[in-house]
Amino acid sequence: MMRSLPIGIFDSGVGGLTVYRALHDRLPNERFVYLGDTARVPYGTKSLATVERYAVENSEFLASLGIKILVVACNTASALALPKIRERIGLDVAGVIGPGGRKAVELTQDIPKPRIGVIATEATVASNAYFDAIRRASDSAEVLQQGCPLFVPLAEEGWTSEPETFSIAAKYLAGMKEFAPDALVLGCTHYPILRDVIQQTVGENVRLIDSGAATAEEVEKLLTEKDLANPNLIEGERKLCDDLDHFYVTDAAERFARVAERFLGTQPSKLEAIEVYGGDQVRQKRDR
Image 1 (cartoon, rainbow, N blue to C red):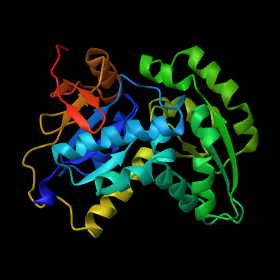
Image 2 (image 1 turned 180 degrees about the vertical axis):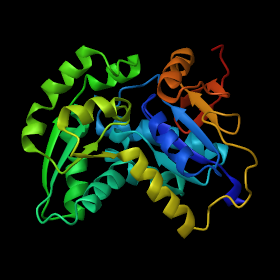
Image 3 (image 1 turned 90 degrees about the horizontal axis):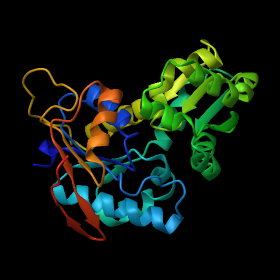
Image 4 (image 1 turned 45 degrees about the vertical axis):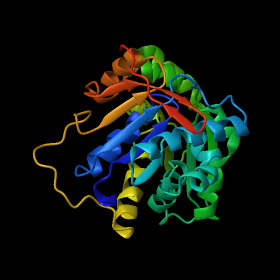
């Protein structure tokens, strides 16, 4: 029974759609349910207690729908709230920070003293969550972190090739380019949308680590280890945002759909606006 249940994903907004895409691509036999807490974004400016509360509320909502594993696509919630979430929902929970950090170390393990860069929002950088994840996996890596807050609105606007975007990237990443990392972790779920800009700015020899893709790889292993992989083969070709996957938002469903089309090339077939209150989940349909 558990094996046929969907995988739950939540993010503070739309950025987690890149994690959804990575999971969908790697696990085409699985179904997904996604919650974007668009009414309360951003999480990075909130206190630890508030982030934990929002994260637990979102997790309990998804758990109430019937899921077999939860993926926390929000970097802030991954950094601050995983223990509390695990305590409250009693399911396996995967964040994006640990997998991203471990993947960077794995891909540079043949280098005696690898240089690993991390770019993320200012809140994630301030938390040192990626630094700690990398340090747990390697005691020899040199780590440089850089906040790139404007990358988020640029990604959401779809400004992936404008001269202004390259100019902003050059300013943000000047120190990183001088650092000359062997690998660079894209420590925000929006940043894969700007992958080409980032790659051209730091140099083609730098290996970019998509935390969402690294998370999907670890989730696949976890499903196998826990015997939770869906045994019922899905017939036909899976497509992003098809009617096998269900999307929920807590506000601005129409805007979410527009950004989803920019990020994924299509809008969700099933998109529902809901309200989440404390431990009680109130599902209220609204007009998109």
